[in-house]
Amino acid sequence: MKLVTKQLKNFFIFSFLGSWIIWSMAVLKSYEIINVSISNETFKHFGSYAPSVVALILTFLYGGRKDLTYFLKRGILFKFDIKLYFYMFILVPGILVCSYFFTKIIWNINYELLLMESLLKNPLLIFIVFFYILFLGGPLGEEFGWRGFALNRLLRIYNPFTSSIVLGIIWSVWHLPLFFIKGSAQQNINFAGYVIFTTLITILITILFLKTNGSVFAAIIFHATSNLSLGLFPIFKARNKLST
Image (tube, rainbow, N blue to C red; front, side, top):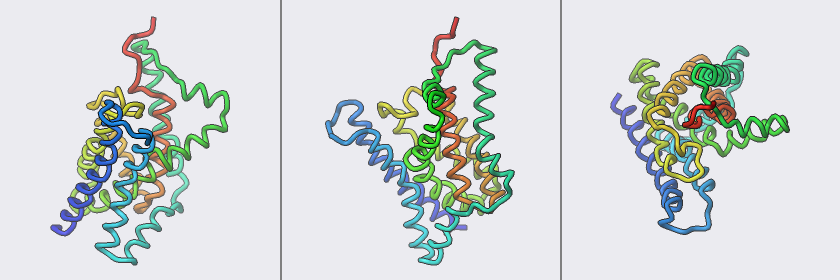
């Protein structure tokens, strides 16, 4: 138990340090404290890979080449019940669509569906956007860390629900610098609401992780689908002014 706790502690410390050091450059640039030619997008992309990179390094240090090979294979573990693919691709989009119509009808909230409008004009772009999000929007850079390394160890200490709550809160706080980076998806989003949503998403990914025997591949796809869905239905970025 102490060994697992130590491994988790090291993972969280180095993941936060790696991401926050890189993202701090984008924060400083956003507030015009420094002037560098590297774009905020580049800083965001590189910073998002810290959890997976840290997880790979620690897995090798703690278990050697054998454990690292097994760890990487979980990233291509895609043979599981086909119903779980519906879970991966349909669940979050369905929740956000229902939330969109509910808030629009009940509270008459007006949304700007800019990405949705663009994709409707050229539906093939949805595949490009999906893979862009998968590789550069967080999922591939994060999920070997959050699920493959951290969740896998948290489940040895806590039950699935508690593990999800703990990881969901930590995962949310890890994103904090992005709220201060100009042009980031988190900019101008209510942090409390973001923590709640991210924790709920964490619970859903934990269920999927357990149902797929620890597939990091499934977690990556679910994460990418969730991010794309938030881009299509940005319920956290609704206009403050109700439509009339």
